[in-house]
Amino acid sequence: MDPKSRQIIHDYKSILSEKVDLCRIMDLVKEFKIFTNAMLSDIIDGDSGLDFYDELCSRGPHAFSTFVVVLKKAGYQELGEKLEQLHDVKLNPYYYKMDSKPLGYCLVIINEKFDENKDRRGCKVDAYALEILFEKELGYKVTIKWNKEAEEMRSILVEFSRHPGFKTVDSCIVYILSHGGRDCNRDYVLGTDDEELYLDDIYEMFNNENCKSLIGKPKIFFFQACRGNLNDHGVKIETVDDIKDNMVSQGLEILSSTDASEFSSQDSILNNNSISTFSDIIIVHSTLPNYRSWKDHVTGSWLCEDLVNVVSNHYRDFDLMSMLTIVCRRMQRRVSGFDIKQTVHVETWGATGLVHFNRK
Image (cartoon, rainbow, N blue to C red):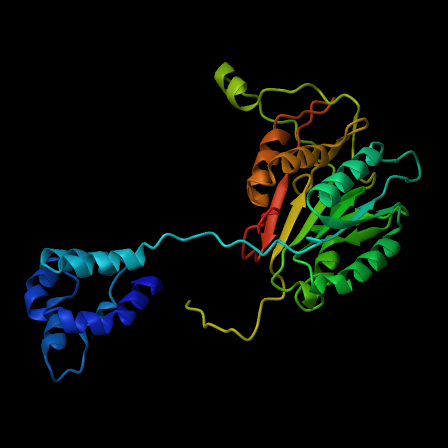
């Protein structure tokens, strides 16, 4: 029997013992083989010290539902329905508290200028769009930092993770746009000096040990950067209907380039006294591990353009994960001038609720 069913039987045991005549249901218990004959003999034997309901909790995964059927067939319809109701209570989604003013603090780091003709054109469009979205529409206090070397980025992020204002706000956002890559299964973003800043080091700055002011609050990370040098050339759709329904092209993004770097690269015990080191973290990558990420020189990065469009139009109605699903669907329609596709990658680390930017 699963833990939830066992708990219901345990909590309701006194009422069942008082209202159910075991002799009245015993033939049905035998018919539905909830217990073996030998086990029933031991339970009925008053000297064994065995309790019917305690032993019921030790039976198989279908014992609870079978016992409910037995109760109903034996004339205990109301009791059977009560157990069903307790077991099948509809779960309501939990939403993070999201009504502080400001709603949170948002740090945007944009690296545009690189040596050797590796500049990331289109960044100013992204910066303007993100500032309008997060500050003007969603109510975050936004700080934008331009063209930082790796160690400068690290220092800025450490300082941000210690922001005194985190004590009074409900969330934080970090959005980094740069070149990037992957080394030994570790993602990194590049400073303007082409030095790596690894993402797991960033997450550690904001974990529950190092950033106690954000415990229990959503910490949202966006990364517009390549994670390798692979290109996704997509899979050709065979039927016309599939093309019309799912993958209608919105035109080629001809003036496009990547964000890539140019070099290779059994039962648990309840414990209310502690919390996991990493929790309430939502991570959005513009592309999959080992793949390139794309941006348009005129309209900005693909992820930023679609994210801003979807969130600005739907944040009053949908939670963030629902909106990211819409973003993923839109990204599936894009293709670069080199016939390359891109897939958004969303991760959650110990998320305990849904993020609704308009939640009161």
